[in-house]
Length: 203
Length: 182
Image (tube, rainbow over the protein chains, first blue to last red):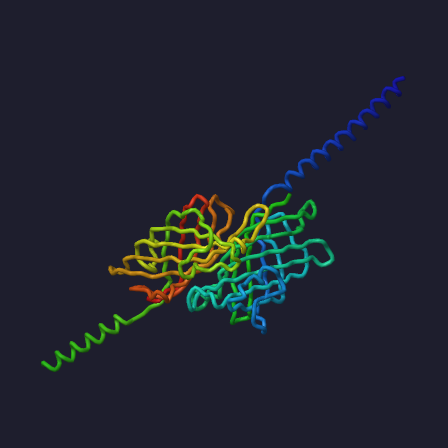
């Protein structure tokens, strides 16, 4: 009789433990969903080597740089050895992949000579052997060096118009917008850096 | 002695002329603050602002804005007023679910007193105005250049960066800086 009561109690305790575990999982899952809906601020960093294409005319491989006005004199800069990263400290990460960068620069519409020229840029990223991707469009003023020892500089803004990005809880679709600044050392190695400091929204 | 005096005077004049003609390039700064009008349909019609690549534009004016100096920095144009015209190309807007950045083309017509003399110059600007990002203000980032036409009066030549904000409420505050030759 006593043994039956003890077994019954043990069974109840086991059921209770299972319930607690299931409840904890449910709370964590419910808690995780609102976490994904928040806005995070993170910097996307593009590095590469930027060079003007030999053919004249705007870039046509990506949609946003193709908006450089046909009536103006646009040249196309494409980048090699490109890479898209995210700044450390944020929840988003960019797995290894291929990054395409194209920037159309309107050489006719400069503010002055020398001066600052309108630039239409786009960054396309696709993960190697994975689903992650990102499309960043930006408009910036590409200014001649502000001092003899400085590179040319981009100053503008843009948007992560679509993206599937990696977070600690898995890939999430996200969009975002923010300011875009960067440098381009045209004469010494064509190095490009571009930072998009963005507010990113995940549904 | 007379010859010496005449020669010395001529030398002084020559040195003075050289000083007057001396041009220097330095990092110079200016601020433009004011209140913008509500956006009007179509592009502005003033100079560099008179362009709309996608044919979907609005014009924002900042009449009688205040041109100021940045404390401790060399000035681009002294102090005075400016009329600012900004064409926003909504067709070029880069859009996300939480905000956007809209490219603009603009002119700032400055009427100031610079080094004790009346001065006027026109600045051409391009850049973006984004939704609020890290503060409640809508940031502006871009570049500018001093226009050759109309020719500056008692002004310099050069270019540089523009930063600041232009809020939906109409509040505008811009800081310009760059290498300016005077």
